[in-house]
Length: 357
Image (cartoon, one colour):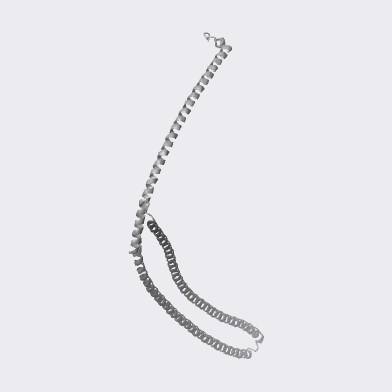
């Protein structure tokens, strides 16, 4: 600590004037350098723009020359195309003449084939009508058989219903007769019981006269209980009879309802079968009519097309004839002026010869 050196801040002090002067010099140098750099860049840019302008002018000159060359080539090409078209037209004229001769021969064949087609069509239509008539007869026969079967089923159902009604009536009569016999027997039994009771009471009265009061009370009680039991037995028997009658009645109602449902089901099935048959026949008729309609429309369209083509051919032939007459008239009125006219005239004469032949 004793040997520690002491530093003074005065050694680090700078002169402000000197610092400002140095800074000013640096700024001036920087500004001058920047100006010089901008000037150089401006010169370079101007040179570059001049070079680009010269380059664009050269490119434009090349493009103009190229367009002129392309235009010359295109004109030459058009001339060649025109010449080729003239040659092609001459060839096409010869081909058309040859084609006309072939078409005439083909037209004769087509007419013959058309006659054959009409005959074949007539045969097919006759066959189709016969087939439709056979189908209609078969359908009517099937319908007649179905109606007979339905009638037989209905008669059987009616017979079954009559037989069942007769059986039910007989059973009802038997039941009523049994009930009447049971009622007579019950009444007879009650009468006998009453007689027995009266005899027993008389005997007991004669035999037990001294104990009349006591026995009367006991007998009355016994009689009341017996009457109550008989009443209960009678009510139970009546209840069983009524329950049996209700059960039988309910079974009859259920049977009648089941029969009605079965009959309604059969009627619905029959109606559904008839409806399906009618719908099937209707679809067949619609398809047949649609096919006939399409065929007629196709024939009409073909006839209309043939008529239009025929009109065009007549018009074309008339125009061609007029042109040929005009060429012949010119040929005989004055000398041909060019080789093309001579060729056209020769071609027309050949076509006349072909037509005459």
